[in-house]
Image 1 (cartoon, rainbow, N blue to C red):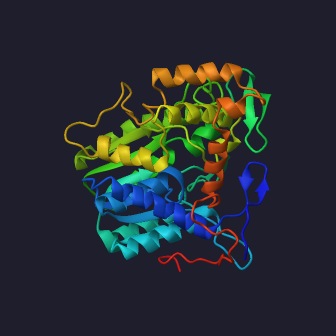
Image 2 (cartoon, one colour):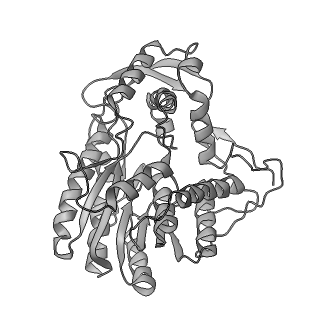
Length: 396
């Protein structure tokens, strides 16, 4: 079939398998160009099919020659209907890993569930024995508690008062003012349940109890802080409370892994275009201005560049892992540079529908968004008839 992007609001309902394949190949080529990383050799990535999770799997496999198990929850393709992009990404990753002689298997299911945790434990035990790195990179708006069966939904709202600021519709380039009402009721608790550290801790407990964590195993979860411009709706809002919980959980996991010599870290990463960030008011405008500023300064990074730097310069170097005063690894250091934030703040004041094309990088934002779904990728023939039904080798 001829596959084109089909939009509904801020969501693309289709994905292009060849575009996703090329995206994966491009990331692999980048990692290979940077040389060997003396990192983990047996890696579990929870949330492995897109974004930072996919970049972590690629970096582990093609930077360190690691065997990888990836967990994700993606929609399979059927005749006349494309899969979600993470399915195609994972199919391409497994194909490239196997060509390179690397072990790679995947599990498609609800990572919050006890059943998937047990399935992963069985796979590690049977195939790898133990893992020495666990990446936790889940992003979901909903979580079903595996013990009580209760369903929790996260919200992205300010706390205490209405938040009003500028935002942009990245499809049209229209800059407008938006107001977001504050959270109420159980919004904070529910958001923590979904996006906090509880499930990360449950994963690590399950892996440890099963004896499938290697001595000195590391685990890393991903977080974001961001600038003052976005903090009311992000870091000081409901999602910020969840991130606080996630970061506090790292210390609890480290304590629980003490007898193994293991350690848990949270890596604070840079603002990037994701399916989730595209739906957050204010964030697309901020990212557009940030991209423009960082590209002009020659310090812009995407997911794969961020994770390569995390692994090669922070996690797997001699000596102690460098962290901030709260024990977090700061790979957002370039974004949060004083000169970068001063420039973005200056541009923000003047950003309007009429000026944004010159002040920001909205075109770069749009390109990154469409590339999430395999569109607008160089060297892909989008006019060609494309097979939408693609299998993941280890899933069938």
